Amino acid sequence: MQQSSQERRIMRRFDMRLPAAVRLDDFATLNLQTETQNVSARGVFFYLDRAVEEGSRLEMTLTFPPHVTLTDSVRVRFTARVVRVESPLPGSRIGVAAMIEEYEFLRSGGASEYAGTQDSAN
Image 1 (cartoon, rainbow, N blue to C red):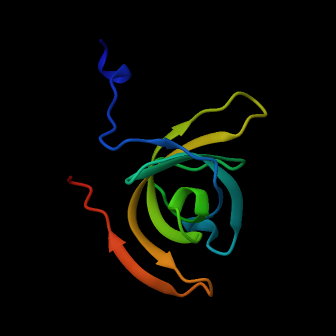
Image 2: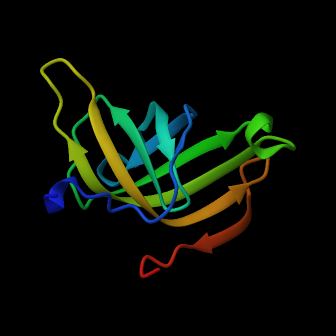
């Protein structure tokens, strides 16, 4: 098997279509609306209408609905680093894979409730 086709993910991915807002470092005031394709404890994959560079940082806010949390909806904001960009066909959206670096759970008013840091060495 070629190395490029080997599965490199450690954490299980969950196919979840969750609405999300993305802020790129270079456009800090612009929120881009998207929907996740899959989510894991360490990363997320989604599509954007705008090009991003591998290695760039972004901030994403999404809400896990009650059927996922088995309680109330939970809003999470995290910073992540883009680890892969899938080149689209002409006129298609751009696939973005990002590794979560830090996250925080948000109260309904937007204030942070808890912040955590992912250790990328594990």
